[in-house]
Length: 612
Image (cartoon, rainbow, N blue to C red):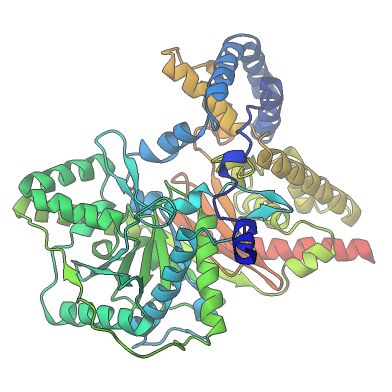
């Protein structure tokens, strides 16, 4: 009886899903007022007046009708945004998603027991895989704890998308296949796919009802590695996933028409727990400099990534590990969760395997050999060439600022995330001499299937403060007051956005209703200030806090003349990574990071001076 009681009181990972509140629709008036406030830094008086008139006209005209229709939609759906967001932000996008949409980063094992070291690739990879499989089992058994803020549970649906999930290309829209099931729901695939030198292998993670051990995984990986390094390379079918989406959809259809068995092979990859990549490269990575590791994970060899997989676990020949993930099915916090779990386990076990060395007689990995012809080989070569060309244009820098971190900012009563956002505003202002419209991710997981909302960090208050920092006649007190006003504004926006009171997704919803009703695009969305302030995916700064744990990653910029800025915060440091395109003459990610670090020092000095 006691045992049964313990079982029933233990929280299950997905138990609150049915009781989460629906995603609310904000009030139209509030959303439009917030929008007007957000365009101010980018307008002169005349432009602002014009936009104000457009907004008023929208509010009392077509906007009101669209808003009513949105409210009707919200009555029928627990999350009125979910399907739209998935389509507009991810599945309808036709650019190659492996480089332009996926996120990735190196694991932080390099900071403790696993610094780069040749000859460690397979051993480390098998230990990491074993811990990843344990996490998978915790999810299957629903024993992974529910994320909460205080006592309030957050939506956990995205955790279902981590394993056995894959995007499938379509001619005009992609789709997502999710094969994961919890134990109580039934069967879930148990095989892992390994990509090495253009070849594809598969083996099962379960043998005789239990997980295979690290020495058994090592045997499988060694078999694959040695075979691939002593025989010719495979065709590299995986490279097709790095292609422009419609092109990949057509290439995939052709591949299947060539041999129906090719579909069975594709489905084996799609349904696999994860894809494990054996890379030949050796990125230089240190606890202070993550740049090369991030660059090689985002833009590395496309023949050993399945770009559409929700989870590619990548191992380099010097024992550096990392991940590359399709962004469509989940946001980075899911990856942060598993990455941190694995890193903690590696720390706990001093980077070693401490279990049995016994290797059972398990079946050897099976190779999936695709039927290809000259057309497929040409498609693969085209995909590789376009991927490597675009990847060579990507510049990524990732450094640690180690003078202080969360501890000191909190001691000064400053929110650490807002601290970084304002430092970024000041850095951009100093580098480019103008305000930089900025997208910061807020999470809306208080609500059913909630994902994200946009916090527009470039506020009137932030710019007033930036101007005072550049004005030699401004006093320390004035600068400090303006900074604290900017902090207050940002903190309030973040709170609003997380509680369903942001405005960007609301405006997106209204524009999509107009489109679905076959109405002309409302003037609000064609107004030059709409895109100049970031609307329609035109944010010069695309940013996100990855969290307060040892996990770092990056996404490419949202636009050609922009930056991707991603950071995590620890007690004693800020780790900041920045991406930009080399072919854009005016962006300089190296300089931007240096100026962010300079801004950290300047802001702390302001606080110290005021305390004296």
